[in-house]
View 1 (cartoon, rainbow, N blue to C red):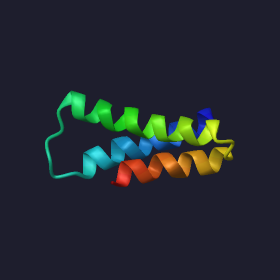
View 2 (view 1 turned 45 degrees about the vertical axis):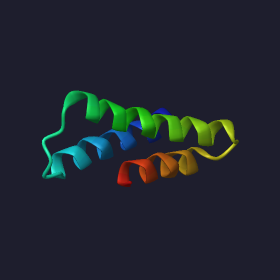
View 3 (view 1 turned 120 degrees about the vertical axis):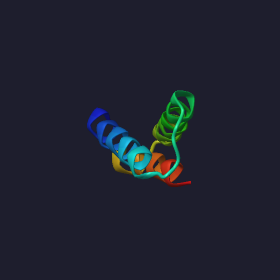
View 4 (view 1 turned 90 degrees about the vertical axis):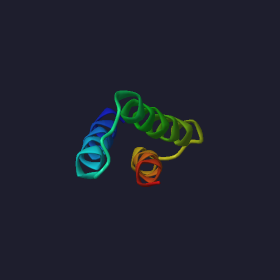
Amino acid sequence: MRAEWSIVEALIQAHIAASNKKWKAYEASQLAYTARLAMLTAFVEGKSPADCAAAARERIEQ
C-alpha cells in the first residue's frame, strides 16, 4: 500500500504542476486528503492495493 500511495502522491504533484491554475496550499492538501480517503475506503472494502490506487487516481482526475 505504501508503494501504491507514493505513486499516487507523485501523480498528485504532477497534476498540480501541469495545471494552469495557481494552487493554494489548502487546495493541494485537500486533493491529497480526498485521494487518500478514496484509497483507504477501497482498502476497507477489501479491494487489492492496485484497485485502491485506482480509486485514488480517479479522485485526482475529477
